[in-house]
Amino acid sequence: MRHNQYRYRQELEDTVAAMALFEEVDEAGLALDATSRAAAMASRLGELSLAAELATKTLLKVRYVDDDRLSAEVANRLGALCCSLLDYDRGVAQFELALAAAERAEDGYLVCLELYNIANALLMAVRAERTSNPSAPLRPEDRARLERARLVLERLMVEVTSERQLSLSAQLLRAELLADTGHPRGALAVLEDIANAAGDAGIANDAQRAAYAVVESHSHRSLGQSGDAVAAAERAVELAQASGDDYELMLTLEERLAAKQLAGDLAGVAADALEVKRLMWVVHQRQIASLVDQIWVRAALEKEHGESEERAAAAVRLTEEDALTRIGNRRRLEHFLAGTEHKPEMLSLVMADIDHFKLVNDTFGHELGDEVLRSVGEMLATQVRPGQVVARYGGDEFVFAMHGAEPAAVTKFAERVRLRVESHAWDELGIPRGVTISLGVGSGPAAEWRSVLVAADRALYLAKRRGRNRVEVGPLPQTLQGHTSGEGGI
Image 1 (spheres, helix red, strand yellow):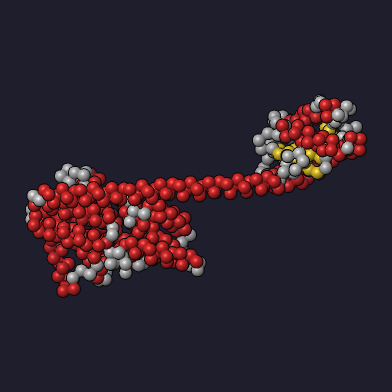
Image 2: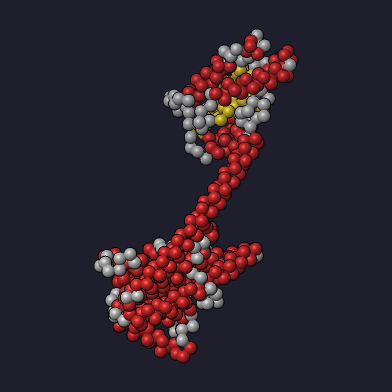
């Protein structure tokens, strides 16, 4: 009702309120319907920040719609949004999506509505191109737009129903096309037919009355009938002023300006030109203010999102980090292994254990024992490469996990780690006899990581039994024996 009354500001307020109510009661389809309607209206009124927010919400949710009729209506509103932002070609593309959905839904009214919108957007695109230089010859792309609009309009005139408002809109569009293509008498004849069909009640819809007056003024101008053109343009401006739509008002003022110029009313031309300029500045200021608001709102949202992700990452790190050594814990190791079990690559695990660690605790105390664990953890952490993990498995046991490396190369890696720990300046920590580690290596398919872990554990046990401070290698699975010739580096 607000739309038909040309009361767009109230229409926007009502629609946003309806959207909130539908969201509150979890009516997804109705909420999307209201959101798309509000987005189109907000853009028309220059509320760019609100329009951008609502359009984004519409685009994110429309993908999940399986109702062709609703899809047609949503695409139609997105097309209207594009046209209000002067992106007519994108608007045509959205109206064509709406047409396809309407055809699937076999909704004759929506089909005619989208045919009307496509033709209207094409005419608006041509008109926008010619505003700066009306006397310039038509460009090839504009001729193509006009021809396409003619073909779409022909189909519309065939398919349009007897429903009064849509039929009037189609006739008005036909008059606009005739006026734009240099047939003003034909346009006036169509307008006369519309007036006769409307009868004594006249055209009830204010938006259509304004469009009627603009086409009438344009046609009279083309015929050199300045007085009639000015009178028609005056009616159009009066109707647009009541709408609260600055964009619509500018269009009617530009038509009145052109009519007054034909009539030689230079003072009137100057006044209308100043008013158009003022309105353009008002719209520009409102758009800039909305854009700035949008930048800051989105920046705040991005900041909040980034901080939320950082908090989530920190929480994950805390749950997967060993508090004493600051390297991974058993949870991180198992998370890594679970993530690789579907990969076809070789997996290698190196299990390390501090030799005689109980003796260190008993001799030097648990505080120094913790320092030994921290030091070993730091040394092992320096050996980790991207795509690998080292974790404290429990007590004084540590595990390296890596995939894609050959067993021979992993064995050499384990030996380097052993020497690194052995050569550390332990006497500076107060342990004159030093600290060593024993290591066991297990390799196999990533999908069998549990078996590989058992193999590494058994190899570690063997290294302990054979004198400690050494590296032992567990047996390969049957499927991998004979596949150890390569020595891919680590």
